[in-house]
Image (cartoon, rainbow, N blue to C red; front, side, top):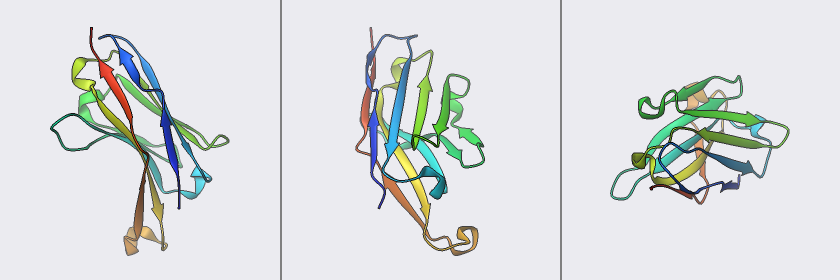
Length: 125
């Protein structure tokens, strides 16, 4: 079991910045992929960004160029730096960790998803 604890959410004005942190209870090097998702009121949860052990990162088109995902393996922590925030970025942001239960997961598909409790980001003047 992996426990994920997010922090860093809050109220920010449009154009402002926030950095979210997600601390994992075990080595993130043992995990297949880490990511951030968000869920706005009345909408489904959507992918924001992911990062793999090799450093490869992927982003949703809606936040491309404004958000940056990064990781600190020594601290077992993944970050989401959010710049140029817009009101439409308002959402609960969730940290996600994908764990492979049976290698090779590309063949077995035996992934287990872990989720944090979420942190609220509100962009408003």
